Image (cartoon, rainbow, N blue to C red; front, side, top):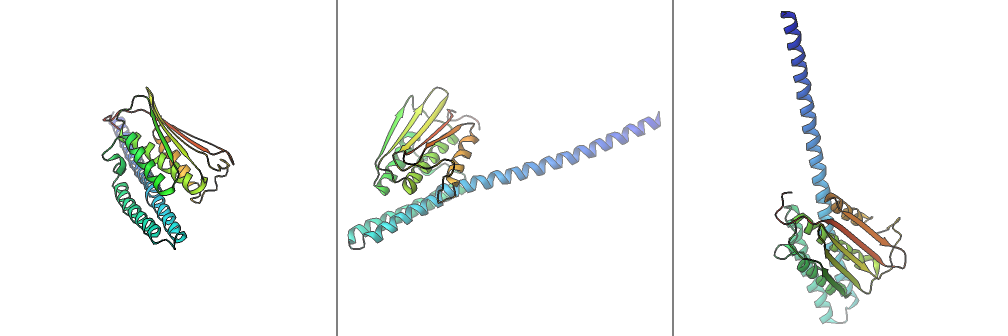
Length: 242
């Protein structure tokens, strides 16, 4: 009897030791997964704030060089570049602190999208038609932030690569999902070989953001036929627990 108790005790001790080892392994894996997720988040935020901001600033400076004979035009371009630098710095700080994008700080998604589209149109000279359909309502911060970032990236790509003459942006509220559609009439590209100056990271970042919310991202494009970016995500109400 004593021998059996000792044997059972030894087995329990071995199981406890094994369980402790498994718990330590799980904690290590969770910690590593958390570090990786944070690195991916920061990579997306750096691309969506610093990289896009620097590209926009460079565009303004190059345009200023092209109007060197017109002091007023040069001043306007430099003022625009300075404003973009301040805005990019603010957005970068908010991103590092995991705060919602500045356009969403005091406005709901439709107004924030109109603000972003208007700013992009002013800097590129390309008109953007923004339309909202369905029952507009406050959504979870992650949903609104994701769709805003997708819109910013789609517009940035249209400005850098598409050579578009006009862009259309549609936000559609449905019962269970909300969809964002951004289309331009630019040169398009081969979806199998984006060939973007950012190495295609912008498309990857958009897909990561949308997939993280169990959504769907579709890119419709072909050389000479413009580009359409469509993101559909669950319409999670504001105030819902993450």
